[in-house]
Image (cartoon, rainbow, N blue to C red; front, top):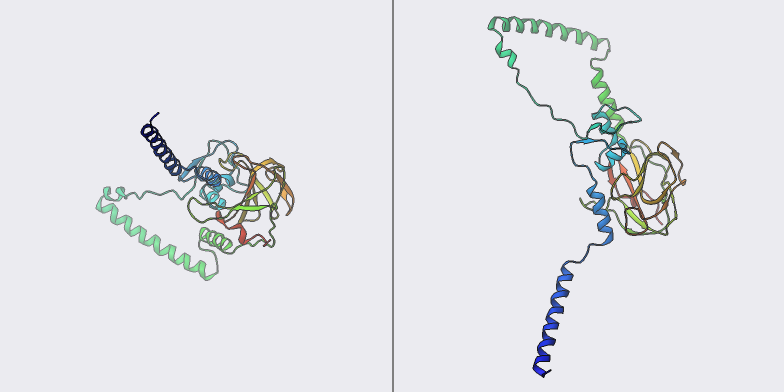
Length: 283
């Protein structure tokens, strides 16, 4: 092989290697944590209505919709303990009521319209007088308004948790983020089989693996305001509706729906994700 031919061959090889490197650098795979977070975000519900699937609870649906379970329960007139069934249609937002024109009023004769108007005025005067008397004697004019006001008042004040504790000892490898595609909790690494403990007292409202991106998941209700979640478990050691005390072992650490052994831990306040590090004691 001549010198010029060898130089040409080496030059071609170097160009090929540089091209291959530049292409690979532009297509670097996303970090494992981003892949896991992306799967969780894919499982979010962004529609106004939803059909219940087998194994779901109203709490798991509210969790995916980033909404307060009480709001969804009110919209669908579902009373506590919020039992639902597969195939049931659930409204996630207030349904829009179409305004219809009162066509019938335009079809009546002028004579009937005048009589109706006169009668309405008389009835209105009687109702006003009756309402005034009731108010004078201290009677409730509107039960519905009273109920709505009491409901809003009960939700106005936060039911604080007196004590939180870390669900597991380990290194935090992914922190909370407020961004749309960010991590809605914290990720803690550890060894498979490590005991996961309840961060505070409450009741298990979901225990299963129906939520994509969370693996074997446990959701605990602590009061009407706060929920906590424990994802990617290897084994679930509690059942739905079970009362849990702070520090009780609820699961073992694993890597279900994750590419490494870790615990994904979330706290939600009235359906919205909050930074767990603001509640957990400092290490």
